[in-house]
Image 1 (cartoon, rainbow, N blue to C red):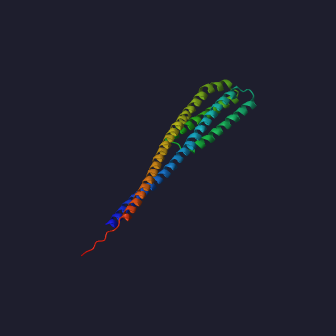
Image 2 (cartoon, helix red, strand yellow):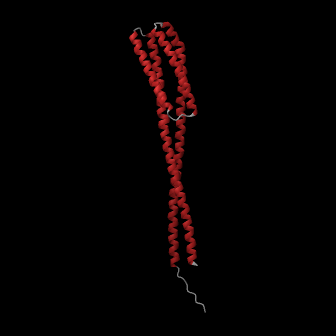
Length: 228
C-alpha cells in the first residue's frame, strides 16, 4: 500500500517537475529572443535614425551654404573669385549627393521613401536653377542673375527644405516608436526573469516536499499479517 502510494506521489512530482522544466526552457527562449529584439531595436535607433538624422542636418547645412555661395557668386567682381565660388558650390553638391546615397542605404519607412524622393526631385530643380544663375553671373548679367536668385533661386531653395523638414520630423517620430517598443521588450524580459525565478523556487519546494515524503514513508514499518 505504502509502496504504491510512494510511486504515485513520485509520478506526480516528476510530472510537475517536467512541466516546470518545460516552462523554464520556454521562458529562457523568450528571454533570449527579446534580448535579440531589444539589441536590434537599439541598433536600428542608432544606424537608421540617429545617423540619418545627422546626415539630414548635414544636407540642410550644405544647401544653406550653397545658397549663400550663390549670392556671393553674383556679387563677386573678379573672375577667379567667381570660379573659386563655383568650385565650392560644385563640391557642396557632390557631398550632398554622397550623403543622399548613404541615407538611401538605411532602413526607410514608406513615408520616408516618399519624402526622400520628393527631396531628390526638389534638389535636382535647385541644381538646375543655380546652374542657370551661375551662367548669368559668369556672363556679367548681374541684374538678371539677381532677379533669378530672388525669384526662382529662393523658391527652389524653399521647395527642397520642405521634404527635408518632413524627413527630420519622421526620424524623431520613428525613433521614438522604436524606443517605446524596446521598452516593452525590456519589461517582458523582466516578467520572464521573475517567472524563471518563481519556477526555480517551486522546484526547490517540490524537491523538499518529495524528500520529506520519502523520509516519512521510510519511517513507516511494514506490518506482518499471519494467516491461520
